[in-house]
Image (cartoon, rainbow, N blue to C red; front, side):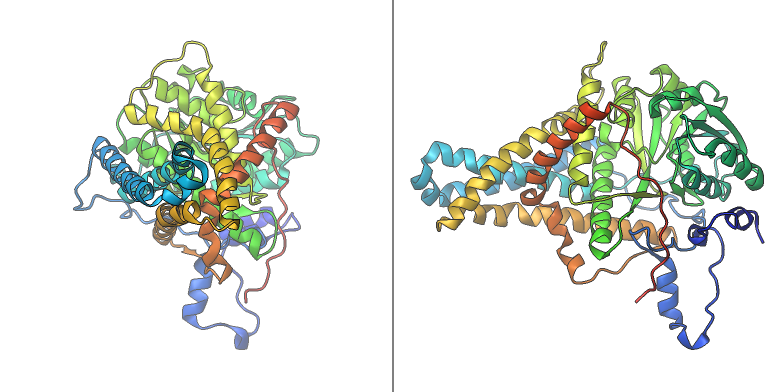
Length: 518
C-alpha cells in the first residue's frame, strides 16, 4: 500500500484517491463493459463531486513543444478581432436600420435606435469580439519543458481539514523536478486542521511548514506565508484544489518560457458542482467553460480577469514589489491589476489543471463577474494608480468595468422587446436572434472544443452530454445572463457589504459516494 493510500485509509472517504491510485478491479467480470467503453469512461471528467476523478497521468514532455505554425503577434490579433467585431456590428446596424421601420413607427426613430443599440448592436459587438478572440487564441509553445526552479506552495486554510489533506496528497503526486516546499497558513481553525496538516505532510514526505494566523482573512494569511518564502517562485493554491500531476511543472514551464517581464501565470480551474444531479453538473460545466473563456480573452489581451485563485504561479519578487495580496472582494484580480500597472505580463496555462468543488447555480457566473468588477473598481481607486502599458489592456478594463451597466441597459431594453413581441412586433427580438444569438452560441462551441483538446492532451476526456446538455449554450446568451447579472450583481454587492471584503465564502468539502455509471 502506497503512502497516499495509508493516509486516506484513516478517513472515511476514499473516493478522491481514485485520482492518485489505481482504480479497483471489477468484482464481477460479467458486468465489465467493453474495453473501448471502459477506457473512455476511465478518462471521463464529470463536473459533479458525486463522481470520483479519473486516474490522472502526467502530461508527456512533447505536449506543447514548438510546431510549424506561424505565430501572430498580440497586436495583430487585437486589430483582427476589432475589425471583425466592428464589421459584424456594422452589418447588423445596416440591416436593422433598413428594416426597422415598423419599430420606428411604434416608438419613434430616436428611441428605436436606442433600443437597437442596447439589444442588438452592443451585444452583437461583444459576442463577435469574444468569438473571434477565441478563434485567434493560440499560445506560443513552451521553450522550457522540465523546469527546476525552487517553488513554495502557499495554502491558506480554516476548518478545512479534509480538503487540505486532499490538496497535499495531490501536491505529493506532482512530477515537478525542482524543490517543492509547502507553507500552510491556518487562519484560526477550530478543528484539528494544523495538526492534521503536519501528520499528512509527514506521511506524504512533503517539506511543509504550518503557520498560525488566527482571525486573518485570506489575503493576510497569504501575506504571512509570503514573509516566510525563500524561493524565487510561489504557487498559490486554495484548499480543496486537486492539482493535476503536471500542474506545477506546466505553470513554471509557462512562466519560464514567457518574456522576462512576466509576473504570473494562472492555471485552469475545472469546477465540479458540490450539488448533485444532472442539472447541477450541467451548470458547473457551463460555468467552467465561461470562466475559462474569460481567462483566455484576458490572457491574450492582458486583462486583469485572467486571475485564478485556485492555482497560479507568481514571481516572489513581483508579489513583494506590489506589497503582496490586497484585502478585497477579488484579491487575485487586484494583484493582477498591480502587475499590469507596472507593465508586467500575466499569462494563462490551460494544461495546468486544478479540480475544484464549488456550489454552482445559474447565478454563479453573474456573481463571479460582480466580484471581479468590484475588485477591479477597488484596484482603480487605489492611490498612486498608473496607466496600463498595453492599449488592449486598457480596452478590456473599460469593458469589464462597464459590464454591469451594459447588463442593466440590455435588461431594460430586452423587457420592452419581449413586450413588443407579445403585441405582435417581433422586429427587435428578430434582430437579436439574427445578429446576436449566432455569435453568442459560437463562443461556447469554441470554448468546448478547446477544452476537449486540452483534456485530451492531459489524458482525460469531456463527459458526454445528453439532450439537455445540447441546450446548455443558451445559458451564455445575453438574454439569460444580463438579467441574472443585474439581480446577482445587486445581491453580491449587498453580501460583500454585509459580510466584509474577504474572498468568496468557502463551501465545506463533502465528497458524496460515487454514483454508478449508466
